[in-house]
Length: 246
Image 1 (tube, rainbow, N blue to C red):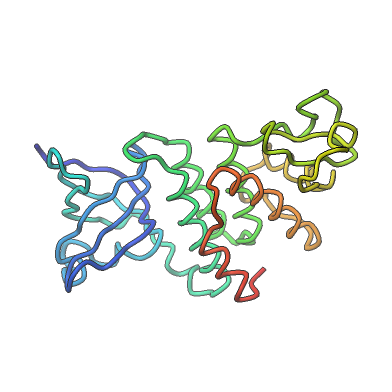
Image 2 (image 1 turned 135 degrees about the vertical axis):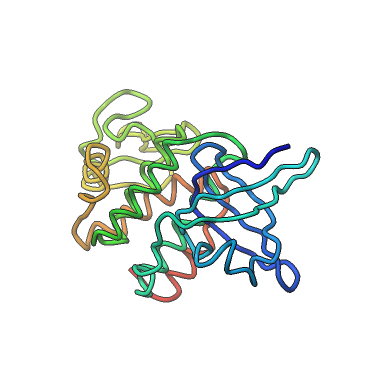
């Protein structure tokens, strides 16, 4: 089979032996793509500085029938986000962004909207957006693009508005108003959180921001929805919290 090309972001690199690496990309045309890059830890000619975390690259690869991993032959750097990752706080958030992208991307299934979401979010951070709020934006839209975001404005059971806050109920995959959720023990979310995040659905990531008191409850609400799907916490976010980063 001939070589193929794809535009992608490097999500993860893992050493293999003394010179090789297993690379995981989010691509526009192939979704999540994993492959072996032989001698990538030594070859400057074929890879250069293109294997930094979240590098935007054009990769050339070869697929062999019956092999789970592609062979990554070359990566040409299109855009580097290395500079913004010199800041520890930003680098920590972008590490979580990469893990989240890998978790929700689909192996060899085109998902250009998710790819464009990552591109826009990284661009916003590079332009000076607060990485904490940019990541909240990315989490929200990840849920929406994958059909996991409940209606933020109405009770899933009776249709009443959520202006008085709501309860997150995994069994009904939605939000319950105070009356319908009275007998449930799920986590509650304040009306201010729902209203603020709902506004993000109408904004570009460069405009995603908020007050400090809203950041933690927004994160907790979105994490409830995300981990309700993954059924496990995100390792990079746990490390970020252990470092005391907000």
